[in-house]
Structure formats: structure tokens, C-alpha cells
Amino acid sequence: MVSIIAAVGALIFYNGDSSNNDIIDDVGGGEVQEINIGFKNGNYYPNTISIQSGKPVSITLDNSVGGCFRSFTIRALGVSKYSKTTSEKITFTPTKAGTFTFACSMGMGYGKLVVK
Image (cartoon, rainbow, N blue to C red; front, side):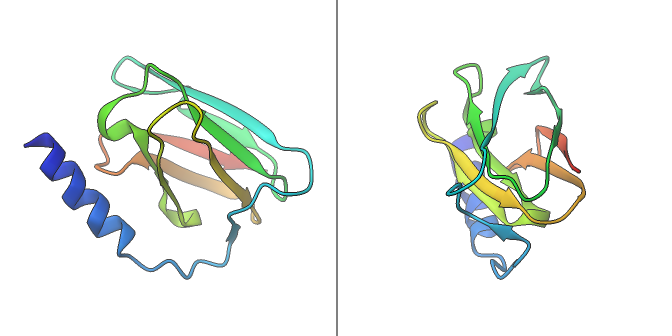
């Protein structure tokens, strides 16, 4: 049942508008900001992350992250990826400053990405 709900949630999100031009989904060029996120006390850990605008970001979800938490989204930046293993990276380059919410596809886990 949970997998059906997760699949429907992911389908709804993935069929949304992907025309957001504030993100470049490419880590080519520049120093990569590497972030490792785990799972602690029922949520992403750390759940507040600061990064620099204009520099590529590579997020790894470690082995403690499971279930729908592996479906990582930053809706305001157009980032959405299901990371099956720790070798699958979530990569993007933020091009504007601000505070953005990241979450699993079902909204059960969440955090803040502060782009300076």
C-alpha cells in the first residue's frame, strides 16, 4: 500500500511543470559542493544545509535513508530524483540565492536549503 501511495505521489510530482529556468541540472565545471544526507529522528539529517549560488552541488543520500525519503525533491528549484543507492547522486547548480525547502516526494521528511 505504501509503495502505491509513493508511486502516485512521485507520478504527480514528475508530471508537474519542469520549465523552471532557475536551475542547471549539471555539475560540469566549477568546484562541486558535496553534501551527504542521512536519516535521524524520523527526518533528513542534517535538515538545514547552506551552499553557494552558482557552484555545482552533489547530494548523496547515505544508507540510513530509506523508503520515500530516497525520492528527494526541491520543488522551487525543479530538482527531483529517486536515489536508489549511495552511488546515485542528486546534482544541480543553484543560480539564485534564497531559502528553499527540500522534501521526500510524499512530504513526510523535509529540510531547508539555504543558498547564499
